[in-house]
Amino acid sequence: MPDERPGIEVMSCDGQSGVREFEAPNEAIQQRNVLVPIAAEFPLDQAARAHQRLAASHVLGKIVLRAAGLIAPRR
Image 1 (cartoon, rainbow, N blue to C red):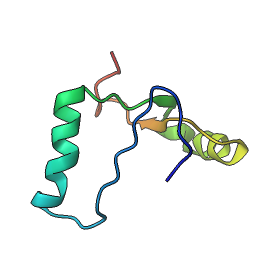
Image 2: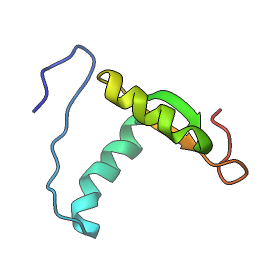
Image 3: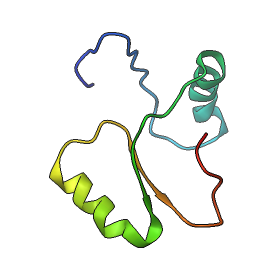
Image 4: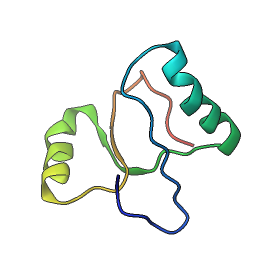
């Protein structure tokens, strides 16, 4: 388990995949309006820069690669 951080609750889930195994996390997401932090966004043609960012330091959040015309922009 990661170190405790103020304002962050960690929920452990079984590593098995299946409908029943996703019920608990799905319930938590629905009840708490879980947001996924995004650390950085890169166009798909700059995937190498995204990998450099990952290699350069610990990233808090997700690195997103955007494929033009396929994914709606973040609001």
